[in-house]
Length: 474
Image (cartoon, rainbow, N blue to C red):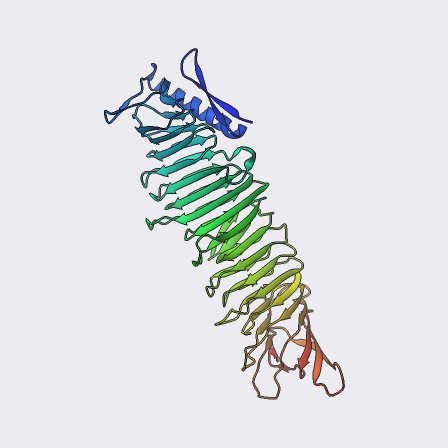
């Protein structure tokens, strides 16, 4: 189904420009009407003949107040728009290439394709579909655009290339089914309007500072590939699939909803209520509240923070010294890769529940901040048996809740090496009980420590018994 934008070319004739979506057609119609009003108020009270460009290209077009309309189905090249035209309408079915004027509004039909270079500081483009290229000419050029997706929303039915290497900035709304490639050099934003939208974001070669912001409307399945560009993603009520845009190169992204403090600064975005899949990314990445998300980091040490936003999330850490925050969600699973070397991972436990598997080489840090219910395996370094550090950092009622450590290795003799340790901080042990498991003399024990803040720690199947040494359980 198509929705028409009407271009009144004279008092008695008009041209219909088909769009894929009613919403974008309405916006385009409003922009055209506004452009015509500007042209009329500026004294453009007659219909202009098409201009000659460079003395060689005559444009076979239908003229109208303040602009030029192309209805010819063949491929055309408009060259540079004459400054007196405020609007370019591509109502044909071919390819139009044009360089905009001082202030140009582009309207292009679903049946057409357009290559448009924006020179204006306030350029506009409204496109009903097709395959299109939008570009900024200068660092002061800025473009606002709304581009319809493919008929029926089939992914790959239409493509859009956005070139902002000049760094002026683009704010673009895109429809379902679009494949979008962004070459970013400035601060650009893309809003996906539903359906499935795939975006490849690449940092341009200009070296200009800027960030790409990608957001989504409800019921959007958002695919984002990052290629060096600093990308902030907020899918809102949609779902996100985020991946490395370049094979063999690790890139970063920022993903969250609501208000977060990152790097000492507060940032606010819409609530993220969808589901997340992240493959091999670095950066700060927090899944949506829908739960059932899967997120994995890259292998660069200390380059990623994963945060569980919903029940049943799975966090998989591949980089040494990366951080995994289990939040306050239920049944979260966190695991570190057995290839993580050079240091363990830091896991943060809230008031939820879940299972955690540290780096296979030990040296992990486990911080318990809420009254949760967690089972932890810290593992140990091969040969030295160096283990992990567990910390009770909870300040609320119930302390750190219930903690079960399945492979805690106690200090084997007074003054001997310490392998694992539980840091009590300001808390004290109010009760410590030990029971031998298995046959008598097995040397394998279950230990239960109750702390002054209400925390219960189960040290299961330990080789030897745990004991208190100052502010530590070892």
